[in-house]
Image (cartoon, rainbow, N blue to C red; front, side, top):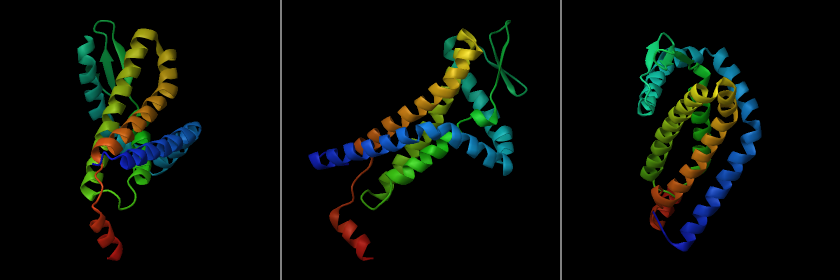
Length: 198
């Protein structure tokens, strides 16, 4: 990691570039998600998400709701909260956050290109981003559940459709700022020259 003014200038430039790309694609997110959903359904990949990923995420979301005084229970494919006034939540395969994970992979393909940074620091950045995106998705789902419980389904749908996208976009911008500022380490000049020669 380098804290020289030049490195800081490059950091700002990279963050601005990725932020512009992220915000530029925002209007197309709904179309992009719909297209991806159709592809996943045709490939039957959604069955893996529904049978494997959804049950795991339902339990994790249940754990996130514990500090709010809920005692979540799993009822078939639903998460039940609210005690005697049972409030059932269905987490569908299309809501587990696979789109944002794919979006993270696309931005990391742009952000981690080239030989400027060491491979190990790139791996650390990717790993932090992968875990962060996963946990942001869990938090996003838990937020939708809480909003639906306290404010009703219509408000939760608005947050799900708009707020969720904004949450993921803000996360990506913060993540790339953090990674460029604190995680990625520049290669030494002779290492870069050696890579180019080879």
